[in-house]
Amino acid sequence: MFPDRTLFDDSLFSSAPTQISKTKKWATTAAIAAQIAILALILIAPLLHPATLAMAMTGPTVILANPPRPIPKPIPVKPAEATHTSTTPSSPSPAQPAALLARSYGHIIPGIPPDEPSLAPIGSTNTMGTPTGIASGIPSISGGGATVVKAASPQKVRLSSGVTSGMLLTPIHPTYPPIARAAHQEGTVVLTATIDKTGKIVGLQVTSGPAMLRSSALEAVSAAHYKPYLLNGDPTEVETTISVIFHLGS
Image (cartoon, rainbow, N blue to C red):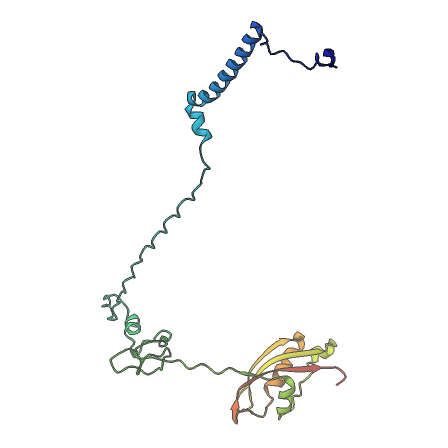
């Protein structure tokens, strides 16, 4: 038995060529041409604008630091030239007084009182030996001016009234003035006194107190006598304060 032909009708293919319509051909050709044109435009566009191409191909920008400024050279300072001053005294004018001449040359002229004595300057080379910054007070042999050193006057020693009361040899007994007694005037007279090396009052001055009682206080204190004050075994002039009390009941 032979199979039925109808079973194989659907499985058979026709080998005859299929005809494509002209419209599809032109559409396919136009699409291919458009793609070729777009590709050509992409390749040709950079060649038409070289500046854009160069900018796109520019590498990373490198910023270099500025070179350091050169250090200015210091301006050399010329050392100041030492000026030599002449030690020779200038010749005085005829109208210059004799006192100025004596002070200029360091000599003392009899009969003319010199000015305040000048002390030898510190570090002076006008003294014997090498200059050490301390004046020795010895005039040089090379003929320099004589150096006159003024001795400092000794200062008075100040003592309290309690110390001087123990040195008192003659008691102080003031006389009450009649006018002050009649006026019932009482009070204390304070005096500043100077006791010399022998113990006598040589300087007396009223500091405070009633006017009616001052003269009597001055007379009583001036007649007082003290034991000399010894400083390092030597009698010394001292200064103290003395108070004289006036009371009507005494």
